[in-house]
Amino acid sequence: MANSDNNRRKFMATTLQSVGLTALGGLLWSGYTHEVKASPLVLRPPGAIKEDDFLKACIKCGLCAEACQNRETNIDRDTGLAKIGTLKMAKGGDHNLIGTPFFIPTEVPCFMCEDIPCVPVCPSGALDQASVSNDKGELDINQSRMGLAVVHKESCIAYWGIQCDACYRACPLLGEAITIETQKNERTGKHAFMLPIVHDNVCTGCGLCEQACVTEKPAIFVLPLDISKGVAGDHYVKGWDEKDQERVKDAKAIETTTKRSDQSSTDYLNSGDLY
Amino acid sequence: MNNIKYLLLRRVTQIIILGLYFGANAYGWKMLAGTFGSSLLMGFIPLADPYTTLQVLATGFVLGADVLLGALIITIFYMVVGGRAFCSWVCPINMVTDLANWLRRKLNLDKEEVNYRFLKRKTRYWIMVLGLLVSAVVGISAFEVLSPITIMQRGIIFGFGMGGAIVIAIFLFDLFGVKNGWCGHLCPLGAAYSIIGKTSLIRVDHDHEACTACMKCKVVCPENHVLHMINKESIMVTDGECTNCGRCIDVCGDDALEFSIRNYLKK
Image (cartoon, rainbow over all chains, first blue to last red; front, side, top):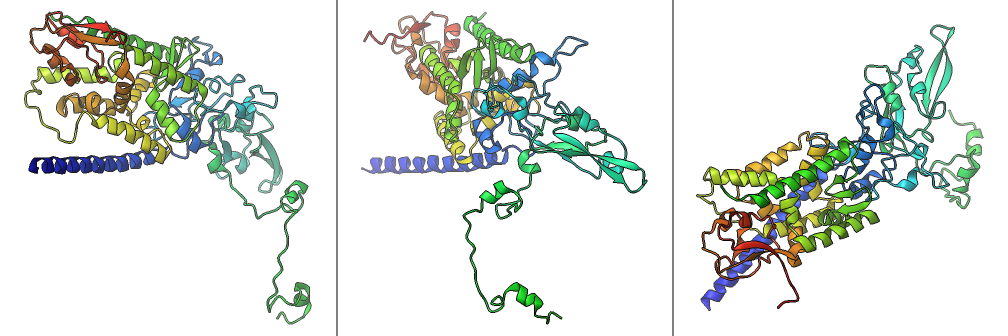
């Protein structure tokens, strides 16, 4: 009797211990995993799904990076050897979720291969082929949205009045993703500013502009879409845009009358005792 | 001179497999590309690690068919050849922990075995389940963010970075900490393959009549509880935790151990 009591007590204690230690481990592990989620400032391969889903889906196999490295166009003409690919697999110390693919435009930008070797090889669905295909279902790298280039105008020498169109020339979608806007340079009175303007409906975020930028630290740089784009919010409606007006065609006005608003606003302004 | 037939065979297999993965990135070879998480064999046969696949599914992401098919192929393969054959014939960490184990014996660190109360061989199954739970809660494959196996493999293919630290940590843990600490107690991948390999057909067979009870096999075995039948019964090693490494066969001087095929029809 005493023995079976002892056994039961021991069993209860070890069970409690196992459950407790598992909970401890789970908390530590969850905390660590949560913290090592990728920095939001990471640029993913073309066709990457939304970052949160990408982190779930990426199985860290590296097939995209290998396809990028071994793409046909990646041969150095002088040596005949393969150049360094665009996509890197995050290592410990890269401050990105370990084992996930990313690229750094200042080192190697995305050259926007027409056959997009990195996307169809993805086995897990982290890179979505449909998002980089046109209406006919053909691969179209111009559809990709890896990020969006942003200009810091204070360090962009074109905004100083110096003629530079390095980013404009480097852009694979020349004249579409970056256009040059001319403005009169009031300082000299006889020159023009030639300002690079990025258009977010065209820019793929390949980073060739960032790599081409002549300033010490690039004045044009690619940021992930979530970071580089603002959101105006639903409550702003473009009164001049018929399509935008559609959003509010069923809206009803709610009128409330208070002591101060029982007169119409015109009456109030015309009443003459404003001062 | 000890017989090292299976040890050599394993090292050759491990190095060839890693070499093929390395060549896929460095030279564009098509034999075996990717990493253990998911690979492509001969350019068209998908392979995927079952536990990694389960982690991604646990995050709630509906995986592509290639990975699911790949995981199925790997599962069936290891159900036949012995689940933890992955551990001893493929996994690169095996070379690290085997080295730690060998050094442990040479440095006589085994003599004063410390009793680690919290670290039982069953711990790995807890970790395996916990890994899936954490994946579901946090939304990232939880083991993949710290798996020394794929960190080492990617290190060999793409470069180590700071990732080498965890490989060194595992080595030190196995050498100075717990004997067979990583592979035998903690690794959830090994736990998953133990379960997959429970029914496997290729097994080590023991001949009790030939055994002289020298116990060399038990000394060298990384999971020596699976050898409970030594010098007792003439039965097969059927425990899923056996890694089919064949070291016991190598060291046996009496021909009492040999690989054999499990026959489910013969009772």
